[in-house]
Length: 146
Image (tube, rainbow, N blue to C red; front, top):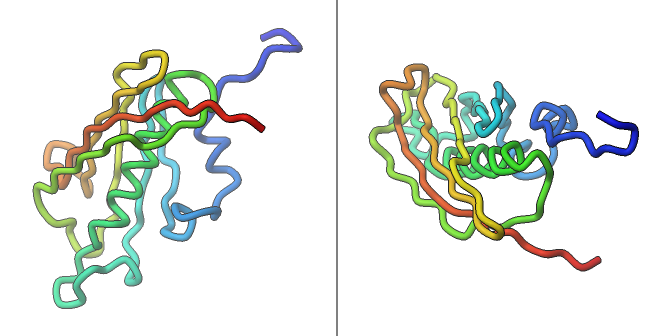
């Protein structure tokens, strides 16, 4: 890298600032990444339970984690931060999360165009072969004028 080159987007650095925003409040953390994917975790916490009778994490925090994982996957694939908005994010819940277990979300950006990025991912609680949710969606790039 030359002295004037911009470093590639690194989700690990993004999470080094920690505890900010909605994801930070939920306790979402970084696990790993590759050239077009990011893996996050949502640790089990009593404040995330949707129904006290079952002890299952509510769907909202899981959707938030998957939105963040797929969004970060876009920036990782692009190698840079680019302002974008979630245009569509469909989540199919296959089963409830297991009470007491951390939920792991892996988002992948599998295609980008000039203005749209296409993403998919899964959430599981320990076994990727037994997912609790699948997501598919699109992000639209936004031009900012400051």
